Amino acid sequence: MSSEIHPFVIDIPQVDLDDLGMRLGRTRWPARLPGVEWSRGVSVPYLQELVAYWRDTYDWRAQEAKLNEFPQFTTEIDGQTVHFFHVRSAKEDALPLIITHSWPNSIAEFMNVLGPLSETFHVVAPSLPGFGFSPFPDPADERPWSVERVARTWAELMSRLGYYRYGAHGNDAGALVSPQLGALFPDQVVGGVHITGGLGMPTGDPAELADLSEEDRASIAWVSDMLSGVGGSGYAPYLTARPQTLSFGWSDSPVAQLAYLIERFKEFDDWPEGAGPSEPIDRDLVLTNASLYWLTNTGGSSSWTYYEGAAGMPIDQAVVPTGVSHGGPPAFRRIAERGNDIVHWEDHPHPSHMLAMAAPEPLVADIRAFFTTLKGR
Image (cartoon, rainbow, N blue to C red):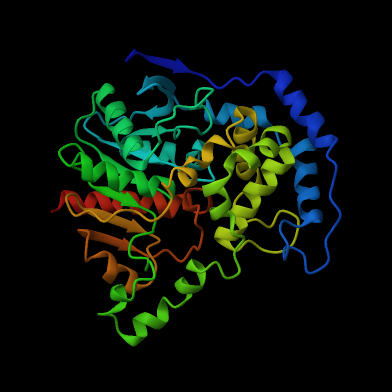
């Protein structure tokens, strides 16, 4: 296995962009089913308007140039190509920080935080295996890409970069990887672990609620509805069982890929019902994420978090300190403190599950505050 690190520049062939435009223009639209818009899935008029914007207005080359403003590299670890941004701070003694993006997202999630974070940290931002420019080989490795395997891969990446003491941040899938990294390598993750939620969320075990007040229980009653799938799309069981079937549509139709991603974003963040530029996340950023999935053909391979049983909540670990942004009600913190060394807990008023995309400035400030807190310990 080669341990070489190679410079990387995003340069999508024009023929691929022409093909995308052609497919968008030839979309065969489904009939609108009865009922209120969004009640049976993604709204047809909404998606038609967004696809028209993708085809006629959105500028991939401009977004590609923005991504290429940051130094990028690839290396091979454990048989897997790993693409990553490496943005060094002007401060030589800055703390290295590895940040891990979410599903159903990509490295595009961090476009607006890489620069600000590099004012304080040496930032390493890898694309998860099977996502974007970290594609699986074909056929994919038969060994499961568990959260632990990703964490071990990240530790090797940081070692290759000469970072032996660093912090970690993660969102969603990244919020699973980062605590695992801290638990496995506490001597390296001396800066602690910062995540954007998930800790302390009840799993349905009555014992978790035993020491909570009636007020606390009432504040998290909505969790039981969410865990039972009330009002949800039921996407997780299908991805857990049959991701290959969905991948045919995602690999052949950019609109099928976009519809799936939009439904996840809307379901996670309760987007407004209407069409038009009303998304809580800039639509160019939303479409950059969708374009990365389409142009790298990684819609199916990104589902490993479900098929491999890797999806869920962050593990409890108390070997390194933990900070949480967008943590939720105080009851969540009380549950989380039973198995974690919580030193920072911020519940942002912004409701987004994709905080780095919807509210980058508060997130950057919160990450800085967490690691500043640790320095004072």
